[in-house]
Length: 217
Image: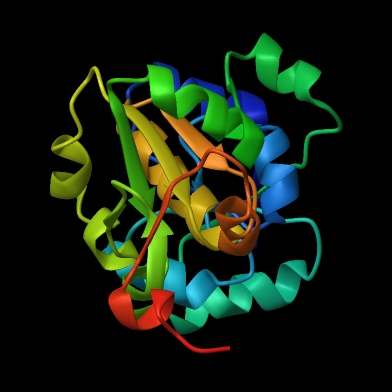
């Protein structure tokens, strides 16, 4: 089992080496501060990694908080043998000093309610299952799956002047957000709330299907 330091990662990037770095911590830890270019997978390692369809010979760098041996075994069972763990950073200072610091921009529903009326470039994306989206969603939102976002072509279709707002399962949003930012799109905001909280927020318009809106109590 190999290990790699932040300085090593900085060197690889400076040498224009292609690296694949998976962050297996919690979404909260990841959102607060992460290594730029990382892909968030959390504890859904198999599901999220398989979406990316990486070749087995790919070098995999992983940042983990616990269960190091078990986590490496999961990657090995998927066919990845060249797996290295990253020496954890104590705080964000080391990341910042090496130019490796990135973070998720999160907003709450009240902030979203204030932004939307004045944001002509807003693009709202709902990551929930199709049936959930069909029952109710933010007015003007579009439903895009994780599978679609794992294709760089989907991200390439994002216009430079669009302001992206994404909601859904927090782990899924951090995963998609990391993929978007990895492709150089940084005008992204994670809506930090469940859909139920979003729907109950004043001044956020919710579109419901006829069957849902006319449902008897």
